[in-house]
Structures are given as structure tokens and as C-alpha cells.
Image (tube, rainbow, N blue to C red; front, side):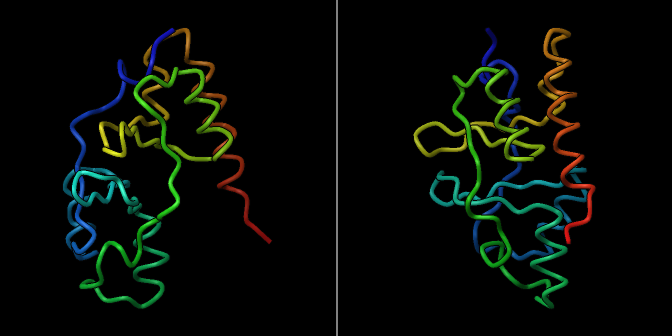
Length: 143
């Protein structure tokens, strides 16, 4: 059974907790990404998503000089490099997330996106099932 170590992206853009949200937005645009881990002393302390920037940043009238730690998501779901692809798909489906930070001893070592799970034909149904679950819950307006 394949593990996340075999499929995770290890070339991950990260930011420091004091980096301003304008710089993060520019980084996201330049790298075509919507998810940036926030790292302090090599330890993962949160993530900033494009949604965090929109909702906790600009909608909350924080200026572009606001810091990452002011808008980041703190309680993030993580996995280890030895987590199986099946387990990762289940976690992502249950937590309704499209990206999973891979952490070893508190240090960020990679990221797995929902599409990474489909790199093997065998796992295509896992990724599509997880994505379907996630999309159903995120596309429906909350009352």
C-alpha cells in the first residue's frame, strides 16, 4: 500500500507568521496556489488559504499589512508521511478539505492535494469520492 511519502509534494511555499497578507496574496497569484502553510522555527503552526484572505482578511477590513497569524487557520488536520493513501482520502473526505499537510515530528515535510491521490488508477475512485463529498458540503449554502 502506497503512503503519502511516495506522492506528497515536498517543494512547498511557506510563510512566516509575521508575513503580511498582501505578500501572501501575491505569492498565491504568482504560484497559482490557494494554500500556504505558516511555519515558525520549522514547525507548522497554521495555514493561510485564499478563503482565509478573503473572509478573515479583506472582508474583516484588515489592511494588506495584517500578518499571516491574524488570518490563518490554526486547527489544521495533518497526516504523517507513513499515512496510507486510503487513510488520507478518508481524512480529507471526513474533514472536507482539499489539501492535507504532511508533518513529521511537528515539521512540515510536504503537502498532498486531493488530485495527488488520483495519481494511481487504483486510487482514482478514492479521490473522486472524497472530492465529491467535499464539494457537496462546500458548495451548499449554510443556513
